[in-house]
Length: 239
Length: 302
Image 1: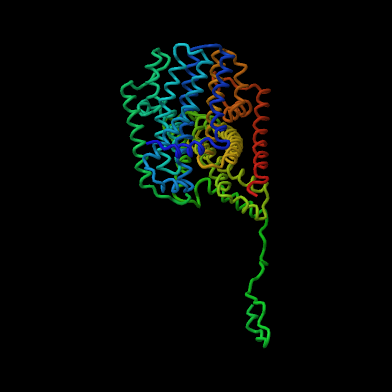
Image 2: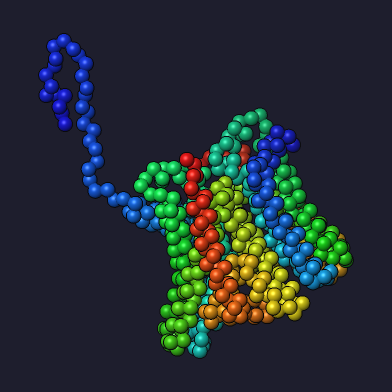
């Protein structure tokens, strides 16, 4: 199910040239802000929770997820070079699975690791906050990568749709309509984080069982459907 | 024209030069200004998907509608309840709708410049009588105009609605004028930032994400820091932190000089001195974006 050559090509497409630097700028900013906040406000659990929840989990993880998830397959389909990959004797679901693994790995490295570091800087993992949000970021990475990889195979405007989902649906609708929060990767991962932290600082609107089931279902379904889409892929012209 | 027919066939030597009728162009040459104007109007139309496929019209038009509908609803509410003033200030509208504006910039700025870079068509532009400055100015102006249309249209809806609801004319006109100045600044700033980021990252998808990251993450970071500064009751630093993201920059300018109420935490508005810094930084950023674009296109693809 895992093809090392496809993985190597995908890593190169995602992190080659200066792209790793651009991807690295976001986590770096998070860490810089954590240092500034720690210097300004000192160690405070509520502040740490607000910063990690508001900046790291709500904006940084989805954006990295969009870049890695759609970037793993989107540009290849776009410039047509995916036909060279598809014409090789590699199963299409294998290609998708490999690209998913790479996208998950990249998202985790660039979002969960900085979250952990930022958490330790902010309050030294007081009340397990750093670990809780790191777990949330890890879980969210898997679901986001699978979702946005599917978007990458379905639409040519995958990045825009991914961002609309992450910013408009989860952030805007989620804060206005409470029902929208049930269908939000962010809330599902927060439910898992709530279980880890145990306190009242990390809360979610979704129960743990619902969240876990939905996370697994979304990830598996998205991966399966992306494989099906790739099996019957037609290359379209520009625009 | 048909000279080869009139030439009598020479007896011995069979070599001859055929005149197949190529003619040089001696009509009017429309020149640089015309090419620049065409590039501007094509880019502006392209920013709303006009002259492109149906699929690429969907998103800009949708965002335009999303931008205007709340204004229409507010007007309807104001008329129905016979309110004395609109529920939202003219200057506040763009701040509230910033997610839509950011999405618009992120989707259309790469569309405007990245495709030329990706498909290496930029040298073709420069084989016309336009120069780097013309290309950059046309694209910059087109993006800023598109953004201005996006941000000023809902203000116009509000204004017309307010007049129809017979609100105070002088008061509304003043507010509308202040709002228009503020969104003009916002359009220039966002267009500049969007185009610079898009021109640096021509890869499809990457540019969109990069623009969103610059606009949204910086706002997220700044508002978080401001909230913390307010909780620490160090209100003096709130205004200075606001300098570090585009939308708070515009917010600061308009609350210092355009009579807007600040959206900063605690409603802390920059003082006049800080306001001058805000204005200078805004104008400086716009100029810097222009300079960076000029630098980017100095020898692109040639």
